[in-house]
Image (cartoon, rainbow, N blue to C red; front, side, top):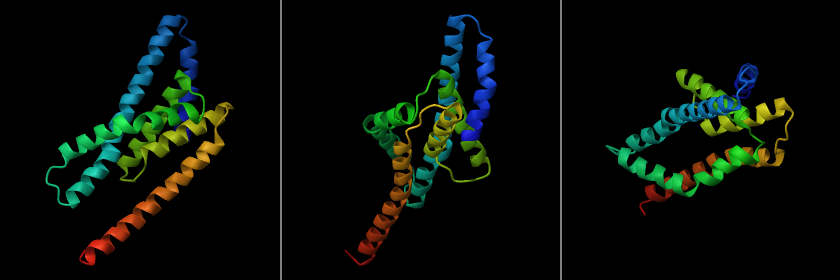
Length: 175
């Protein structure tokens, strides 16, 4: 994702310099960021949501779509703002060019991984794209925050696995 973000930035930046009218430049950047965000949302549906649907189906839910929609709405309303601010503001400073390049590079990386059937995280891809592109540009990258994020990537599956193990043991013991 970092390498793709850097490549897109290197291609995209000179093209923007050719636009002389400030209004056209702003409009172009807004639309490109919007399109990159839409592509990222598509990837979220093809990548992360399919994992949840697959687990729900395997767990016996015949039609998990309504349940999933409710859970996604609840998650969006409760926790997404802080996550968006952390990724979009706190890792490194993002202007429109960096935002587009990072978002688009991360989305391409996730799409390519999906084509090969590789399990990847959209969140990890965007964090890698932002931090890699910002480091390439010589901008300040919040290394302490990155270390905390990586620690959470290690802790979360460990705790989830431990919780799953304990619940299976509890329910298989007849309680």
